[in-house]
Length: 172
Image (tube, rainbow, N blue to C red; front, side):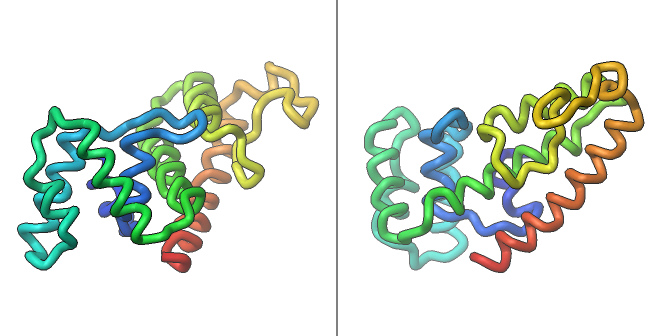
């Protein structure tokens, strides 16, 4: 599934600011969209709606190789919609955490490491449900890297996902 389709799969509105974040990256979050995905998205919007902004129409007709021009158009569309960049960044955070949780293996140690790696990309936000071994706690490795701890952390993440989804939908 393409990244932008993941927004739609959890019913989160795709904005040009979210697309800008995906195209450029932000903080420790690397770029994750390519120009083809952005042009294809713009093309889909034009075909479905027909009455899109001039920049969306230009974007839909742009060559994938024209990175600078595509970024300029996305920047302008993002500026016009005037969305808070950190609020839009939360959408990417949710997408990546949902994807991480949905793609866990049967190995609790690997799963705990994978979940931790996902949060590293988001710079350990204060609302993270994740527990890192030895960070703000005295949990020894033999107690942390267990099925029981993984199960607890997975439950915490599922609750966080539900709450974050509600928050984002409420603030669209």
